Amino acid sequence: MKRLITKIFPIAVLMMMPCISASGTDKVDADRILFELLSDSHVVENWHEPLAINDRSLRKTAEDGLFLVEGKAFQVNSLRSDFYVVKEKSGWKPVEDKRYPMETAVNLLLNRIENNKHGLMITHHQYGGKNPRVMLQMQVLYDLLARNMKIYCSVTSINASEMQAVLVFHNEKRNFIHMLRVTIPTDKLFKSDSMLTADMYTNIPQDNIKSIFKDKK
Picture 1: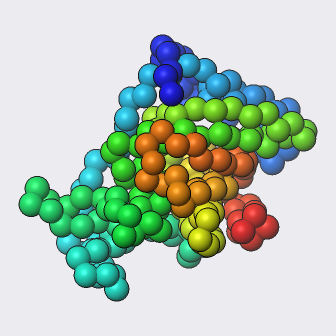
Picture 2: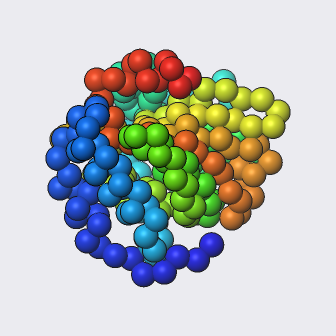
């Protein structure tokens, strides 16, 4: 999936958006601005938070050689920034392994996998009942949002055909979130350039997360 020229000015607009209320004109405008940003053409910058692992944050799992890097919870204990690593000669590496599909999915959603070439079809649930769709390379979502927002996720269901998860971007300064319900077909998780789908709810006051998470779970 090829994207064209990155435009820097929408990112600046996104960072300057005011604190969003739960309803009204402000949210209509904020949803529109974000959708236009996602719909624009972008070069994949492949931005990732530096991998800094403190031994005190490592937790053993039931799988030999697989460790959890303990992060933080957001509002509900199951919505977390924990991710999974294995030890290699070069050091710790986020796991991406067919033996560990759930752990790989968590790492993918938390932007811990360096070579993410998945596409993402987003249905954007905007204020006023509008539900436009946009298709983009999944990494673009993190390139645009993850620099200035904390990321949390929760895998909510797993069966033989797919995994479903909640992904949250939290703007700590302005105290609002963007939330996605992501569907990951298990046969596409390890296929390069495959397409995932998501329902996206944006500019939500973070104090609503408990009820929203319960409703969408």
